[in-house]
Length: 211
Image (cartoon, rainbow, N blue to C red; front, side, top):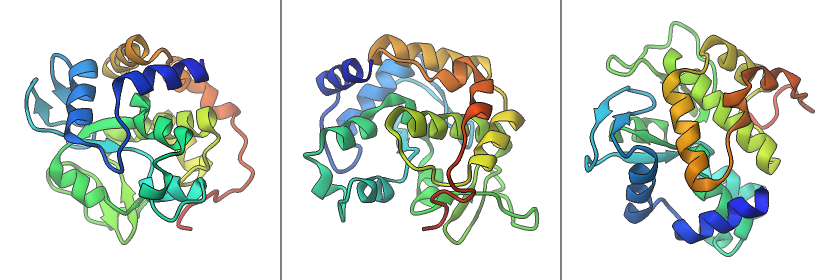
């Protein structure tokens, strides 16, 4: 399935150092053909609306994982390209949320940290805490990437397991998983079987949080 996924992805999405407009448009057309809602802010959008698409795994740290000082230097690495194209790791977001999330890692913040008035997420220096309704989506996407590609978790395993429990899978997440499977050829097993998250064992209690 892993090789099949790579072939299918190569057919549909071009390589680039960032999500090009054509790639974003294709992803939205394939997975959100009837429109949908953004991940963090739950802002509704329709087909043709201008929506940003976020890669859930930090691009710089993905490049570092493959020994590259920048994503551009990893362009010719097929696995790096495959991971960045994997639709299970891509989410529609508002431009504001995209900017606030940039160069941060997922983490827990104290309740004293002010929440965004429109979207409910909290942010501090290098840390971004998703709003409650998005925590499970983020967790299941990160755990998928960890298992599928053996990527280090950017954040603690305990945190993602807890987020997975606190924000259960909903109908929209199931629909999205099915739509991605039709195009890409594989599903996110943590959406089909959320309890799978509890079976993961971490080698480090902190993994790669704030390296």
